[in-house]
Amino acid sequence: MSLTETINEEIKKAMLAREKIKLEALRSVKTAFTLARTEKPAGSELSPEEEIKIIQKLVKQRKDSADIYKEQGREDLYQKEIQELDVIKVYMPAQMDEAEIRTYLQSLVKEMAAESMKDMGAVMGAASKALAGKADGKVISVIVRELLG
Image (tube, rainbow, N blue to C red; front, side, top):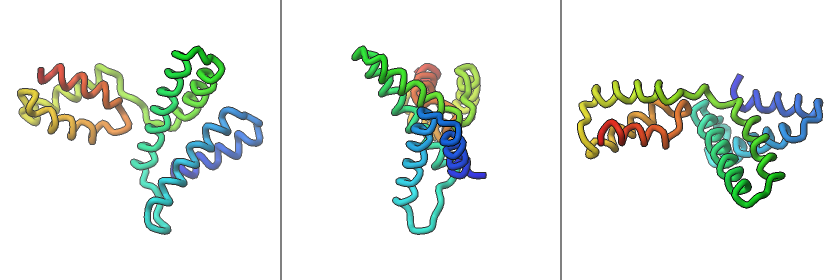
């Protein structure tokens, strides 16, 4: 079952259970999927990688919005964003912790024979592709800089 189908089933369950926050969060995911599908040729579906990218984008948006609301003292809106974030995060692949990312990047740097910051672009490209959906790009960047710096 694709992520799109799973989201549709979860929307039905949330409607029956009258879970307002969950329903809003899932509808935003469905809307994002629909918009992405309309940008493609007719009849084409989203790949699992594209679905994960959309979920990541929505999670990042929720985090950023929550931070802004927190700074502005809007606790009500902050809580809503955090609750929606918690609902959407469930559909992301398991995230690697920093130690796992570091171990992977160390082996990648050795494998690519990267020695200086000149090689950062190549390492970041390979790492971002391999760790897509499993690790935050900022964390990857910080660790790569550390290893090459």
